[in-house]
Image (cartoon, rainbow, N blue to C red; front, side, top):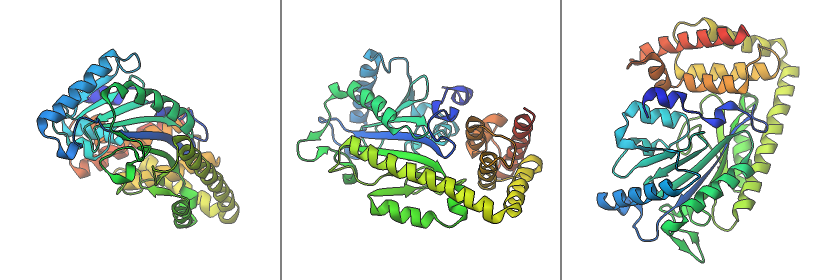
Length: 352
């Protein structure tokens, strides 16, 4: 797909139609699967990686569920286009580096994406808006069955075998992206992380393991994959996220009562900078967009829908900025274009 196609390709989670989507931004399930007759990818030579990719393509061509999907060879995309897919949470940062046999399969709605020859032979991902892990699992289970004919590496005692031992068992990571600015501002995130760790969950940055937190966006996911069923893991993550949503709502209510006009002032100042700045970094933009979205939810600032907010969050990312600009930009040029983008978008939103 061309860069413009990447921007216009439907991405279902952006629409924000799921449960509690003002705080639980998106739900994702990722399944790690390997083929029994091949070494793990880090021990595969180029010829074997290409054979695996070809086998996957053959299965896709016969599948009613996936046959209309885009099959994208990473090495056929320029680096900017690859990072557009990362920013849209359709592929992982390591996968964006490309390499032999690396293909991404993305369905017409942007709900299903499959990374071939990442850390594992198959990384099956399904993502929807809101707290919808049960529905995401229903879809992911159907996708997983499409590739069963390739003969998964499976052990009766240990379950699905994976390149990283921490994924052995179900091979499943169930995660929910949450937007929790009030918990962050009230210094409760450390407590949240400790409590999640205590019950076998983990809290990561915006783009997963090893990434920074941007705009108060955190990923909550299961830490273990062995010893519990997929349904038990989903229940555990869903229950924890439901509690986080309730705690964020409670923290917002407390902040509004305690801080009053000073909270209003902070949020309106953020709104003003976004509306009138001439240069802005992605980090600052995301922090201010986060405040303004919370202000919208609390009826302090003009209404911004979840879909509009998701598009703002994507639009200020470094690679999206360059595609919208239609050319390569230096960091300072990106900051200028980003400010222009925000002024124009917010003018449209406020004018509704």
